[in-house]
Amino acid sequence: MTPIVLFRTHPYKAAAMTACDLPDNELEKTFITLLTLFKYADTRRREVFCKGGCIHEWHNLDKKANISENRLLTRIKKFFG
Image 1 (cartoon, one colour):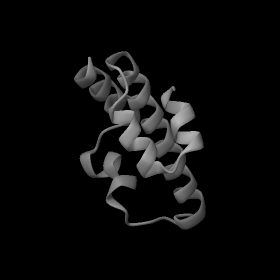
Image 2 (cartoon, rainbow, N blue to C red; image 1 turned 90 degrees about the vertical axis):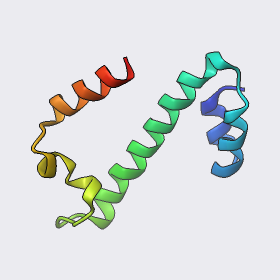
Image 3 (cartoon, rainbow, N blue to C red; image 1 turned 90 degrees about the horizontal axis):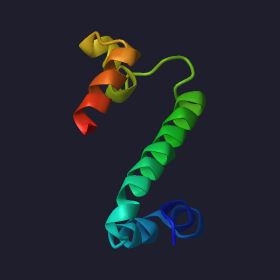
Image 4 (spheres, rainbow, N blue to C red; image 1 turned 30 degrees about the vertical axis):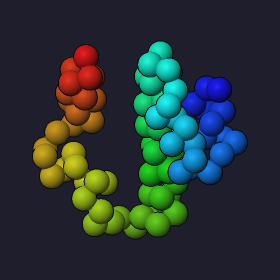
């Protein structure tokens, strides 16, 4: 079973536990699936709960660290190699 199928057909906790037991060749897919899931959830949260601005630290990392989005992505890609 692929990570996407797991997260679409099972509750999050059960899918996460099962994803930990997937073969090594599925771990990268699991990581990308989780990042995508969290990105979607965060985007939705910003649209619904943070319309007029917010004070969530994770929504203001670029301002706090004075890092542009492209530089931040470059650092993340470099870190994960």
